[in-house]
Image 1 (cartoon, rainbow, N blue to C red):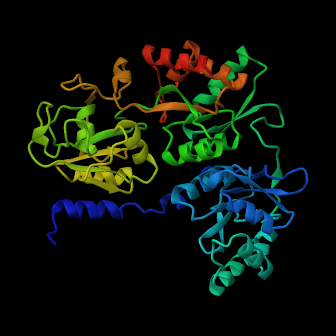
Image 2: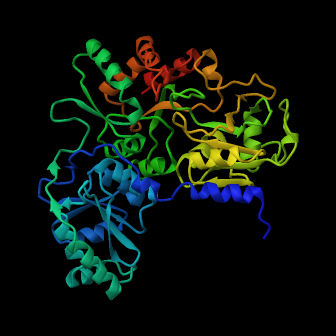
Image 3: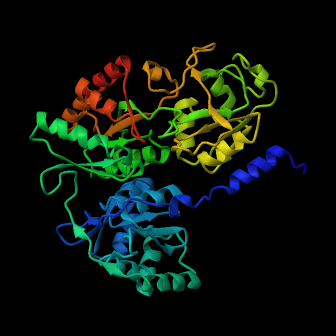
Length: 486
């Protein structure tokens, strides 16, 4: 095999990040876990596909099943509206990371039959709800295994070695008391829970304080630990709405759909970040090597570079681009992994859902993408948000245009911000059941966030590291119309 400079660049970038980073990264200080799964008759809720009914039956009169599908079960487990999630597969890295970000500990997996897993939350100390431990042990008992075999004949019983390993695993886990809480987003003090993005820790309290002066009867309690906690909470019904500093990832949407049977409604409240910035986050953007003289690209050209089958045909050489000062040479395309996270959302929302180009080289992190572009004169990369100082010196954000020939703009702070054609937003997702209005408290706060006063508060916080920018008049009018229709 011929080893090229591009091959070495790619290998070095792949070594720069680990696939398990989402499991081991820092998380906000976890709070005591709440149990919203205890029923009045003393039973605990278990969720998943139809296998959940068999698991509940195997536990005798101690569990009650809620059929929400395997995807829908994960966010409900995250928020503690079910005690156990029954999955005919292992959790993905993204799912484990989402549970961990909220609960403090990775979910505990217990294989109860070949190909069938039961998951429970653990707190930051690795403890499970003390009521759950004996249920898991019962499933791995000889009697429990016999019951499961009768109720789930489509699954094979555990091999003796797997059964022994599961029993040893549970013997090392300790139990803890979890505080019980009624399901829902209304807290004991009468306030409404808002769970979502940690990029709002500065601006949202100011918005809520100002709104409280106009609507003193509506009180809100924000719990801002990250966008990955927002949709699980909306799916579980533990937040009045879900504020996110990004778009929905496919796994977020699929889980909500499976649990609810319909889609959430999106309201854009502000433009997410601006840049390029040396002192704060730069929004998702297209990067080229700093030595590349090209002035910019149009959205249609971006699709033809990064996707396969876009109108006009795929672009594989810089000289084929219509933009001024385009160099000559092959286009080397870098981006994130299409694994249900950022790259999948980017492909669906910015590339019209087209498959990624055959030349697209998937790398494990934004840093790895930009390091590859910095080392490759023919490189172009699509990267997610970058913090201050994270972009290497050898790259630059490429100006873009909604039409060929320009004008090419950057996602800066000026009046042209609304013309950045691949904008990401501060999105608020609401659970709008067909034929039913959303809660008055949610509608009132959304209207205020989109009011001139609310947008002015957002503008005052724009210089912060996670600073958002207010919407332009066209986008603002469109979003106000959406809220009025809810």
